[in-house]
Image (cartoon, rainbow, N blue to C red; front, side, top):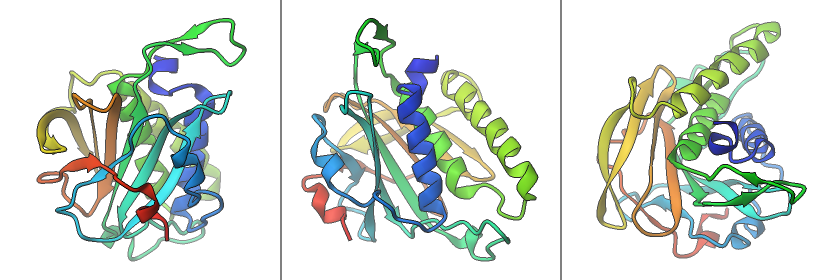
Length: 229
């Protein structure tokens, strides 16, 4: 499932790295709206029922520069203290929506082959790795952190390829007012969900902590610039 769930290794690795940068409090280039404006598909976020803060995260692009996925944040931006445990971490309330372009056919970086299509598993993988990047145990010894993250990321990858099995369950949430089936799971770090709306030509993923996924709704973002600080 490598090319399916990772939306291309380069794009997924960049997404996870940028998500970790966001969790550490660094903004870098992630707040630039330019990449979002280059996408050929609509971006999604929480619908108008949510009235809290909204912010940009990052986009992921293929080797030729084509934007393939990206994320938008809602609530309190997650922070991660690398040197000591953050007493306020458990109180953080955020939800991130991941939009992945539906690509039935994708060319390899060198143009000589075809990669597997993106799918709802692609959205589940990006959401799962994003959650890990901003919630992993900050109190863990530095020497063990990468091993732990590699192990948990591999597990998230495997889970994304088994959406019809446990620990996934079904959850129906509105997308632009239309009830849509999602696959949903919880862990000690937060929750992850993924599904494919009927319209829009995308797959949606989401992850969060401190904000319940039940009762959430998603909609097309009419003006992505409204998410910019």
